[in-house]
Image (cartoon, rainbow, N blue to C red; front, side, top):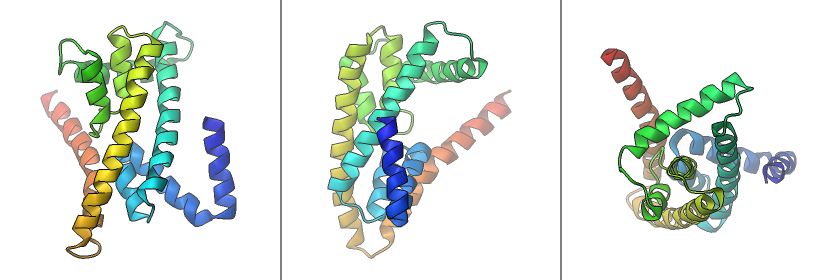
Amino acid sequence: MLGIELISLIVCAIFNSVLAARILSMITANHIGGRLAFITVGLENGFSPHQIIPIIIFYNTTYLLLMYSIFVIFSKGIRQFKFMNVFVEALKRKVRKRKQLLRKWNRFFIFFFVWIPIPWTGAVIGSYIAHIEGYNIRDTLLIVIPAMWIGVISWTLWFDELYGFIEGFGKGNTILVTICLLMVPVVAYLFNLAFKKNKN
């Protein structure tokens, strides 16, 4: 899947550099602000929901399988690569922090956690929580992947309607929503970092 993704982007960049740049801007937004930023940047780039949904589903499914595989492999005690251990331990700390929201995570709560489009609540962290709760790989993916797909479809369609409504008040107003969705996670991260420094 990762190979297909890379080849598709290279081919797209060769034949239609503008389209490739738009898709890359969506992917970048995804890693800065999460799924909602992915969706809103896609809408701002002029993509329809029927174009956005398969792009997000394919990209996020590939990313989930890659990151979950790394997490599972390095959680099982493979210690050859120091950087990967540091990376996985940092993820575990973040997962434990999210896990404190509930004493026991059942399938419904994991599904909801993945579905809701808030930064650090997506499919990757949801899969890590399921792994720590003791779900096997098959059960984890059967909970997380449908939740992610349903979330992508429902939130893309809803934001398309919302953007249509906002545009009724004047063109360009949707850009403010998109910028907010991109900036909120960054500002929250910096605020959290400053709070930790003051605490120390």
